[in-house]
Length: 429
Ligand code: HEM
Image (cartoon, rainbow, N blue to C red; front, side):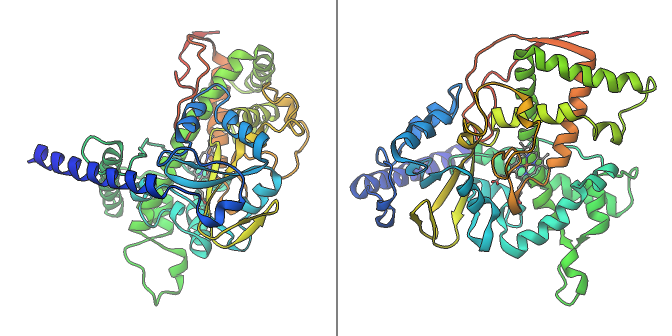
């Protein structure tokens, strides 16, 4: 049964893809409105996706792809990548317009597969006032005050790229993983509501106590402060997905950059050994200590600048607007090229160098976007910084390490990560 279903679905998909292919070859052209935007679309159907993906995995990452085209066409150019007509843009002006979300100018532009896996009430799928409300409710336990109480555990989940829900595909596995996560959350929520098991003061508990209700009651004045179980589950999943790969990638790049920059490591270690020396032996790091690690904070920012873990921020124009003299039309996919912003020589001289002292004095807004900016700025910023700071403390106080494979290529996934995952040999100091 499973095999014949598979075959039928395979044939249907092949026919559909072939029709799409022929259609695209026959009618392949820039959408009329986009003609005024410089740039080229590349081959029918695939556009410039091959060079996009192959340059994505090169040591300088997507920067080469962007830089070549910016030299030729300027800060705003069009392309066709990963199945979409897209306008790429860079610079502080573009960041301000796309990230500040002023006047509802843009909305988030998730791929179809991401939309399916995350569920309709995820923070990433809502816009405008609904988004603001969800952020207020979901992000509160992630604030510094919330975190002081919480013991938030991150579990991995998966995203997929090709939209074929056929057994064996990444998309299918992602949907299955999502369903397993929902079932797990259902059973945990039920147990907690019935008071079964030991009480746990964690992120889920704080959401359940404060916000959860079984159904939205239109008559209830407090409605605005409550979440249904569906909204709770969609958003816990969203936080897990958004928080897991980003944090692990940041830690991997951090270890790589520190290994390659012994002077930075030495200065970082000094900061942490000093903190450790002042602490009574056997006690844990305190909030006051984590909040007073100035050099560590700069090392984290420089890691996020140099690695640019999320290399572009994707939006959909919610209305017509103009940027650098080009008219952007409602419905277009517009991507902010963050790698170029983080490698702008005027703001970050010698941009390839790993140099935390760049953050000695404050930068102009929208020059550094490690956690984004505006209404969609990362709500996990505090949690991520705390996790990384604590990790650094134990790492540099206890261990030394060396890289086993200095291959510099990058994994071609949405979250930038060294392709070899940077294996190391660790020894006690
Ligand atoms: C080093 C780790 C992290 C980095 C570099 C990072 C980076 C970012 C960036 C750049 C954005 C904005 C993207 C855009 O404007 O399109 C973002 C959004 C987001 N991040 Fe993070 N993040 C990290 C950790 C986390 C953690 C730990 C969580 C959850 C606990 C999290 C949850 C989210 C969510 C839910 C959004 C979407 C917010 C919205 O659309 O309103 N992130 N992150």
